Length: 424
Image 1: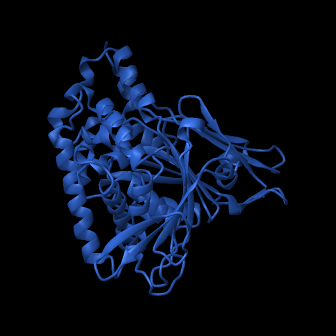
Image 2: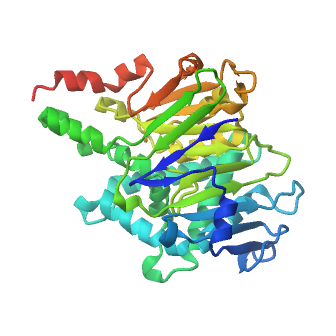
């Protein structure tokens, strides 16, 4: 038995133990299915019913105005036969979500761009656009080469197709002045990466030497996100975990999502259902609060990288944090493997301390926590450090609030030395 409470931004609270099903019973819910027309390669959405033989189907509750949240349960065709390829299933899931949630996407996109790029009149800097454009080219090229013979790149391609489907489903519903190109669309999904992509070009990096200590601390605070807490009962009879997202009012449009995806048998996955707090246009959480049906709980808090020389290691020929997180969520069922998969093709952007808890290794009935139950993976540009911290959790609790735990990561990040040595 375990308990959990998720704390959301701007003093919005939601108890995850209240099921999405019960919420949908209280509010008007849209049921819809999307059909793949093989002869034309087109996708057709039909609202009003669930057809489990369709490529994908969903229940969507647009209750944001009443509750502060929409709710979406999105499923692929769950047969492992050859009726639909994995690529078609994932694209269909994305396309259906784009069609159902399109009214939420443009306001969210507009809010985010005008907040992130307010100094540039809401326009993305050319260097950031270039980075994302090159990153999309890298994903497309790598998946074309390896998706048919490598399980990792096969899953990257699935999520890439889900993103493309969401993008094209959205664009199919909106007037021309609200259409968004794929590069800008990816920035909504990769929102956590945007600030550090701004450090890709040396001339765009801040000059810390000209900041006072107060200015430096304010700079760090504005780029730090989240706090997290895990606690076990003194007698190990229960475990609680919670996460609080620190963010701004521009991110107040929210959707709580459950993705259910069943692949064909050639490339099996370990987790077929992922629930997460999320946003319009995102195929990930962005808060980074996940629970998978492999009984993994995943969350993170964001660490600041002060040693700007580390950003020399940034490259668009990597995978953004959102992609690596979702690939790890699907491909793994234990905390150590999650950390290892996540660490591949590290973008060096959105540098976090991820906490991964394997609830299968916490036996509350026999009051025992097995080794390997709890890992952290701490990312910096050029490195991902992984450590089993199960023994720390056994002491009673684990807090996380935007500070690296692993000593070598603290030293490499340069935060402590910068604050101590700042002459102003």
